[in-house]
View 1 (cartoon, rainbow, N blue to C red):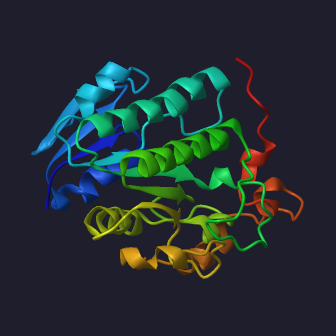
View 2: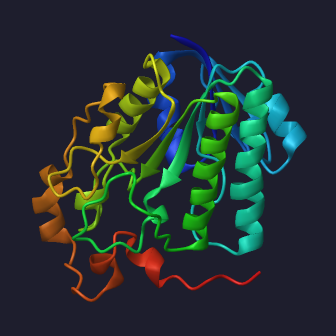
Length: 265
């Protein structure tokens, strides 16, 4: 069991979910976000932190032996906002980890790094980036920082290109992109406990029958997802209108992000 897992972005929907599912796997959780958290449970502590503040991040990481990095901007915004949270913030996190013993990092990357691939493409982790947004570009930067810190210093990371991590699939696209919270939790545990992690890209998807991404390169981690979005297909068919073939949500892997304008500062 790990002593202390740091979860950045812990006030968000995904962070709130992982607070519950990761509790059995650590003696304590250090939760951090730019906004406050008031409902702390046993063995939880909260440290308010803007990840764009390098000195604050150094103090935040001290004493942690594993990090789940969810913090930052998670939707398309202006470059100034994305630069501060997702570029400077991820650099600050990796530099802080280097200074404090290099705990393993789960970096929440995104399917939006490859969002302009068509939905009939089947991708490997080595396929070139095709970002669909400034947000997607920022996640490519984060993967590059992780790669640099691995090659230069030996910092180990799992770069999880999350599809859609929700309690259950909510639309037709999620029948391919869904990552169940249970499967994400088991992936995190596998990455933190595997004899070797390296700097490994992992597609953040459950065992979806209609999935788009090949995770065979990461089989050495021992992670075997258990859930399948297909179990919810009948519910989706009954309750969610099917988009037309020319709509972005049915055309590109990044869905509606490909329709987003570039946000001006």
